[in-house]
Image (cartoon, rainbow, N blue to C red; front, side):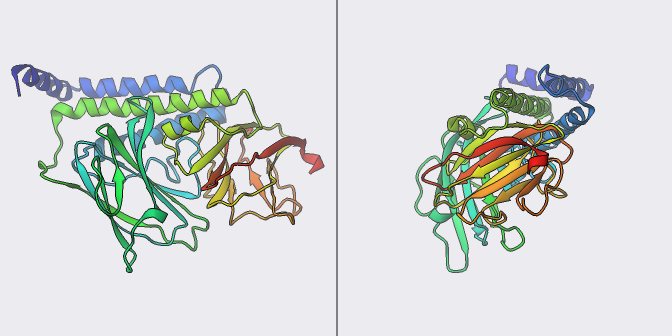
Length: 372
């Protein structure tokens, strides 16, 4: 390390020692709150409270990803989305796992396949708090895996091709995303995964000279993620209560799955209105699902409310089509596919075609609740 590096290291440690690093971190989090107060965001106590709660959730995710699991030499799986951390219309049917990686290293994943309906692993470059997007750099799906008779498998993760199960990276790869999508969580077992970095490693430990830079990345993650998806909702305001095919390249750059086609927008309903959604033709596919989210693109609380349906949980019409309704109150037995708004008047919504060769349009219309 040269004299210049030593000087920078000494200054960084001094800022930790006297508290300036922590003060700058707190100031950055305060600045991130301006996202929730943007002019176009809903100005109700309920939506604002959810917005500020959203920032606390992003903070937890940022600390996990950048501080606790931020060293690609010592990888481990954490979650950027789960029941209480939600990002970008997270899928209530999915079990997400993330891992910090680097194209400078090689990795081995050991796993047990389980019985979950859909499994995919993808590498990404960038990040919400750095480049503002996650560029796809490689993917392998459960159907492609070579699996032993005992249900176990190994995957090599590297820039250079490896024999057997291989998940590609590029030198810029920085994150691994695992998606496990259930048709019925109560009956399916998730895959169990472990990851290790191959080659020589230094000892793990906290470096005071890097601590402030890590906190800066946490703030950038919180602010960048919140701003990015607020921008999406501003765009969706051009076609409320409709479900057009989204920009698929944009969805991929936000961490999307190459096997999923996304139809995405926002919804707005007055107290006496309901939104009817009809998938009149279901193509051959691995699956589909539809969900309702809040303005911050967090899936509504599926622990306590029915806010999503999939190919297994939905009731079908006699002709094989699916008709769903989003309404503030239960419209009765004629509408078995009722989804709750959980006290919201507006938010995001997303329909996914998974593993489909074609992506039929999904029709929507707003009707008076009394006419259901």
